[in-house]
Length: 144
Image 1: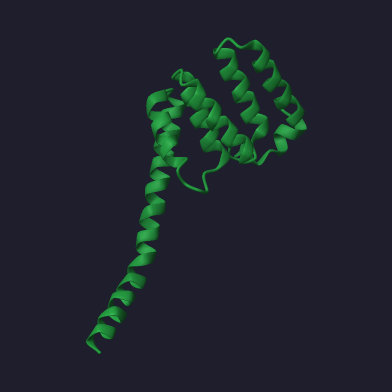
Image 2: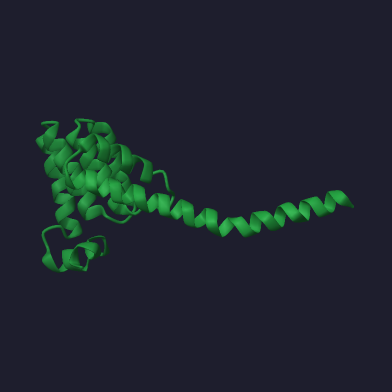
């Protein structure tokens, strides 16, 4: 009988603490996201890559995380990792930017044929079309 009471007490404590733990985890993720954005904006590529790498571990990582991770890795000369990040951005719904990112990586790798191939894919996705770009949800934060 005491065993059942103990289990019920433990469950009650866990249920009471869970919302606070969830909020703390969300706040920590928000802090990492803000720090990552600041590192990216200041062109601290190593810090940006590290922090966006952490953010990319979330199953709900938005395309922007993958795009910024890819750009940071490209700037660090980690081309294979940058291409992988841009591929993730493509599958997460940001192909017009991901393909452009891949073109930039291939340009840095001095592979113009592959760069042009991915640039053409970006254009087909709407990269050169202002109406497509203005409707892209990945740019919504920039319109505010």
